Length: 273
Image (cartoon, rainbow, N blue to C red; front, side, top):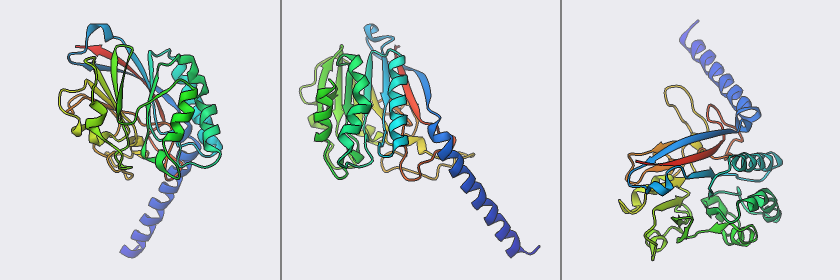
């Protein structure tokens, strides 16, 4: 077999493998929701917050029926863990349409069980064909605190919510303005902006956006990247300028598929060290 034929056979094989991975990812992996329980050691955290548990949910990207079902499952799994707080870190919709508010309200309604212990920030997709102020209307009815470049002291923590950088609405200085002296946890959809947090100002940042890369192959090959979601893709990074946790999120963008990167409900347990 000559070189041209070998290249053609190789190209056909790679294409077939890629197609198989996409199909598997759409039918199986993208729906294989997992609960990851992660200890997060934080220097200087008061002992009273040792063991504090935060359920992290992000990137529902609701639209089609399957995305709604998955988001509902994620919320049910989070509530089953009886967390102290639920943190929602953006991209609730892929884009707004006339049916989105009702769908989102139905999905999030079980969070009323948290009795106001839910905090949220917008993501970049929450600006597509609409405004995050639609979120505020929905969230107010469900006792969810939406933070857009503002902070909120609740449950002995100062929650600092920064609006989406990719949507050109982030304002770090405003978000920290008049913040209390309680330990600070930053919620910011895009993780790679963590370096803009003044060093020492916060104990932790929680982000989404990256989807963990959505497709992961051997040799750390991750063909899909996100603007400002590439450096910190998945998991806990204790050595960042501010320690940061990034969730893989629940939904998908682009191909409705995942590979070796299942959707995630993250349960963080803070540890004082």
